Amino acid sequence: MESSFIQGLAHNVPYEYWMHEKAKNSSSKNKPKPKCAFFPSVFDLRFNNNYWQTLRSSNGTFYLYGAYYDSRKIIQQPVVRILGMIDRLEPTVKSNCLFWYDIAKDPLVMPVVEYKYVWNKKWGNYKQGLLQPYLMTCNLPNPADLVDKGFKLGQIPVSVSLTEKGCEPPTNNLLINNKVPAEKKRFAVCVKGLDFLQVDLSVRLVEWIELLGLLGADKIFLYELEVHPNASKVLQHYQETGQVELTPISLPGDQPNLPGLRHLYLKSKIINKRQNELIPYNDCLYRNLNSYDYIALLDTDEVIMPREVSTWNELMEKVLAEVPSNKSPSSYNFRNVYFWDDAEHSHTWHHDIPRHMHMMQHVYRSYNYTKPRAFVKCFHDVQRVMTLHNHFPFACLGGGCTSHGVEPETAHLQHYRGDCQTKKNCDVDFKQFLVKDTTIWRYKEDLIYRVDAVLKKLGFLNEDDDGYR
Image 1 (spheres, rainbow, N blue to C red):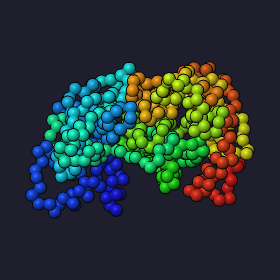
Image 2 (cartoon, one colour):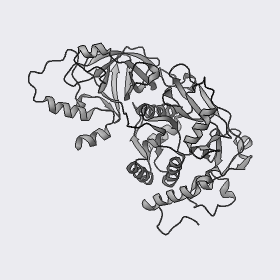
Image 3 (cartoon, helix red, strand yellow):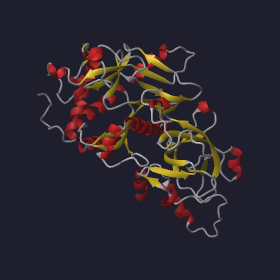
C-alpha cells in the first residue's frame, strides 16, 4: 500500500520494483559483485526540485524528467528516449544508457546516439549555460546479447540510468514508461503546467472539460504547477471519474519554485516559460504512445470546434477522406479565431443559458482569422511525431514533418480571450470585425446539464439554483 502510494508520487522512479526486488534478494547470500555497477538505491539518486533526477557530467548538468520505450513501427527497431533539460548547447559530452533488466544483474550499456534539440534557436535563449530541452535516444541491446546475458528474448528493461563513463555509480534511475492498454483510444488532450495560484478558473474548467468530453476527448492530461483551491477541487473530481490525469511538475535547476515567485518568473521570462512548457507536452506524448491515435495540445481557453459535424471522430473521418492517398500528414492544424471575452456582455446575456457558462455566453468572434499556420493547434498523429511544440511538431519520424491545414469552414480553433495574443493592430485587424457564431450551442442542453450537475456536486452551485439570473 505504502509502495504504491510513493510510486504514484515519484512517477519517474522505479520505486515499487526496487522495494520488491530488494526484499526478494535480501536473503540471498554470496551475491556476486557486479562487473559494471550496482542498481542504485532510491536514496543514492540525486534529485532536483522533486521531479527531476540529475547527471553532473564533465561538460554540463543533465536534469532528467522521464524515460520511454518507443516501439512504433515506423522506426523499425525499438529505442528508449530520455526527456530532460541540459545547460549546454549541442552537447558534446558522450553519455551512456545503463539498461536495468534485473536488480541482481549487471546493466547492459548502450551509448546515447542522439541529442534531439526540442527548440528553435531563432526563438531566443540560445546561450551556453542556459537550460535547454532535449530528447535523448539510446538503441536497445542486440537480442542476441540479451540472451547471452541470461535475459529473455525481447525483454524490456525496467529502468535506465544515464552516465558519462558507462560503468560508474549512477546518480539517476528513470522508470521506463511502457504503458500498453487493452484497447487503444482515439483522442487525448495535453495541457501544459497550470499556473493559476490566485485566479479561480474552477467553473470555467468544468465547462471546458465537459465540452471536450462531448466532442470526443477520451482523456485530458494536465500538469500542475499551482492552482487555486477551487480548481484543485474540480481536478480532483475529474481524476476520480477517470476523465482527467493530473501530474504535478516543477521547474528544474536554479529556477524558482516558490508559488507566486515562480508565477512572476514565468510571466517575465517568456522564452524560459516556453522552453519549460516543452517538457510536459513531450512527456504527455511519450507516456501515451500506445494509448491514443491523436494528441491535441490545448490551453484551457481553447477548443477545436467542428462546424459541419458534431464530434472529433466524425471530423477526422471527414478530414482524412480529403487527404490525398499518397500523403501521410504528421499533424492536422486548425486556424485560430478569437472569441472575445467582453463583447457579448456589453450588449446582453443570453437568458436561456446560465451566466456561469462562459463559452456558451460568449458567441461573438472576430470575422477574421489569424494568418494560416499562426497560433494554430493540431491533432498530432501519435505514430508519426517525434517532438512537439505548442503549435506544430518540431521533428517527425520517417522524414520531415507535414501538416494538413483544415479549412475553417470544416473546423477551427475557438480561442476565448479578452485581447489578441499579439496586441499590435488587434483592434484594426480583429476587434472591429465581429460576427455571431453559435456553433457551440449545438451542445447547449447536454453541456448545461453536465456542468450544473458537477457544480452542484462540488458545492459551487446550490441545489435550487439553476444559474439563470
